[in-house]
Structure formats: C-alpha cells, structure tokens
Amino acid sequence: MTELSVGEPTVFVVRILHSSDWHLGRSFHRVDLLAAQAAQFDHLVEVVRAEKIDVVLVAGDIYDRALPGVDAVALLDEGLHRLISAGAQVVLSSGNHDSSRRLGFNARLLSAAGLHIRTDPAAVGTPVLLPDEHGEVAFYPIPYLEPALAAGALGSERSHPGVLGAALDLVRHDLAARPGVRSVISAHAFVMGGAASDSERELSVGGLGQVPLGLFDDIDYVALGHLHGRQQLARPVRYSGSPLAFSFSEAAHVKGSWMVHLDADGLRSVEEVPAPVPRRLARLRGRLSEVLGSERFNDDESSWAQITLTDPQRPAEPMEQLRRRFPHLLELRLEPDRSAGAGPASYTEKIAGRPDLDVCCGFLEHVRDRPATPAETVLMQQALEAALIESMEGVAPGPAYRDLAAMAAETVSDAELHALLSPRGKGRRPGRSA
Image 1 (cartoon, one colour):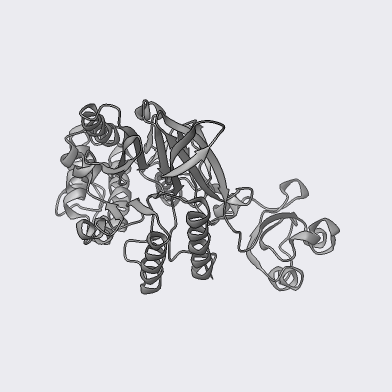
Image 2: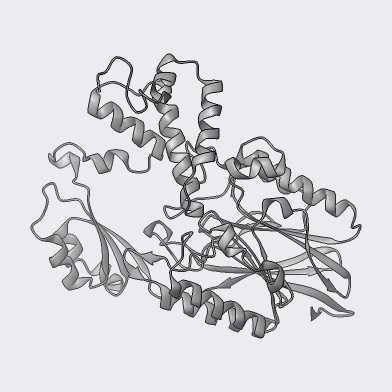
C-alpha cells in the first residue's frame, strides 16, 4: 500500500501493475527473444521498486507453449523471485498457451511466499485477499477456460460465454458475502470490442470464442489477457497487451502495462507504463527498385523489417539484394500488382486472413471440385478443436474429442456423418472403395 498525497488529507492507494502475454520462450520470425524477455523482467522490477507496486497481476500466457523449454522455465523462476524480492505480491493465472497442470504445480506452497498461481477452473470463486488501510482487496484470477474442459467443472453450457459467465457467477456469489470489499478480476479471454492482431492463437474454431463485455459489470478493475495490443474496452476493463511484439501486425503498437490505483472507493486512476523496445518494426511495400533506392526508408534500415514487393514479375534474388540495405529483414512477401498484368493470385494470397475451418473446407473443395458436406465440416471442426485442446496441455485429446463427436451427432442428421464415424468407414466417404 502506498501513500498518495493529493492536497489534504493523504490518500492511501493500492498500486497494481497489470501485465499479460509474456509468452516466454517465443521467437520472432526465428529471432530468439529470450534476451529481450529478460530485459522485460529488468523493466518490471524497476517499475515495482520505483513506483512501490503492491501487486503484479499477470493475466495468462506466461509461457508460449504447454511444454516450455528449460531456458524459459529458468527465466520465469528468476524473474518471479526478483519481483517478489522487490516488494510485490505476484498474482498470475494460466492462458491458452500454458499447461494449467504444469504451471499450477506447487501453487499452495508458493502462495505463502507471495506468488499466487491460479489454474483450476473450479477455484475461480476463491479470491486472493490482500489487506490495506481500507480493508481488503479481493483478486479473482480466472485462468483460460476451454469450454470442452471447463464446462463440467463449472456446470455451464459448453461455450466461451457460458463458462466465463459461470465463473463470474461464482465470483459474484463470493463477493456478496464480502460487503465493502473491492474486487479485481483477471481473465484470459477474447472480449467483444477488442482489437486482435496476427499473433494470437484462435480460442475456438469458427470465430465463436468471443464473450460480451457486459459479463464484467460492477467489478472495480478487470485485467484482461489474450489480445496482444494494449487497449481499453471500458474505464475499468483493459488489455495490457504483450510486452513485446510477436507479429508485424503489431508494428504500430505501443507496448507496456497498466499501473492501476485503487483507493477506498475502488478504481481511482490508471496510467500507461511503456515497455522497452528491443528493435523497431517496419512494414515496407513497393517495387524492388523503389524499396532499394527510396530515401523515405532510411529510418527503417536498422529495424526488423517485413517487405512486400509488388513487382509484376518476381525479381531475381530479392532477399539477397534487400538485405544489403536492410540487414534485419525477417519476412519477404510477394504480392504482384495485378493491374500490371501479373498472373492469378497465389494460394497463399487467397487464404490470407481466413479462419482455419474455412481454409480446410476450401482446400477440400479445391482438390475435388465440390464443397464440403455438413458432415465433413463437422468432422474438420472436431479435428481443429481437438488440436487446440491438445496444444494447450500437450496431451492426447481423446475424451474431449469423443464429447465433441457426440455433440455433432446430436445436431447433424446426415447418413454420411455416421458412415464417416463408423470403424470401417472412418475417414472415407460413403460409396467410395477403400
């Protein structure tokens, strides 16, 4: 707790540093980011000390994958130790990139040392209670809730709004027994109104992963994770964004975190805390001769660069030529100017920005000259959803896959579906020989 003098009398406030989406162990177009991520911990520790931060609140995606590398694990261990030694409590929860089982190991013992880890959907209604001069602040860290895995534990419908809504019902039930307690929620979710970038993994197949902003009404502060751009959806509802850029779509982002002040009445103020930038991002576009010769690209020569060439015909050895001027060129795209007589669009251009399910169905139509049937669409959706679950935990998705298949059988009345799911016909269309 910190004294904040604003005239008379002195105001006591709780200072929270809201961060998320560290993605420890991630690379950027094959550039190792571990040194930059270590520098981010240096920055956070400096902010904790300089601003006398009481709580560092991290809203998921601590690691980049369910089975993180040993270097990423060592960096997290060292970073959390330094944050707590600097005087802050740390409250963090798992995201869709984390393995909740692995991240949550030993959580009860670590809580006594000031590190509060929440990964269990069934425990969302049990807060981390931290006292100050005005009473207590109840922190409810909600981990990422995969509907196929969390709906049973929460007794909710199997959808993103369903599981998150059920979790918030548990939070409000607990708050009802704590009159006057201020509330802070962290959640890893795609909330309607948020602006996405290219580096986030889809939360569901078919774009059904968004949840309404109204779920968070009447909470003093909501710390969101998942979207990588820092943004405000409502005064108390914000994404901190990732501290580093993970795609060129984030070139215009200002990375950092939010410093949140709570006083006796709840949310007092929120301030931007910019993060250090290891290297600028630049997105350049034009014909090869223009990109190589124009002075307007002088300031981009030291940047990590994405260059899109629009020459009607593919230039010879473009990467070699461009890297003489832009040594940190990481991505080269070729998008010929169609008005100049270039050939038809490439397959990559045609599928750019389309959801995974659309790409799969489109490929099926492309190779056999007829669209996917409802049954085949369901099967591809099941496979994609099962892959999402498997990537979260690093385990085979058998039970969840069977549940999804059962749901499909209830909603799709199609003889072809049953033929495809049968032991002899699995993976084959009816009427086609093996």
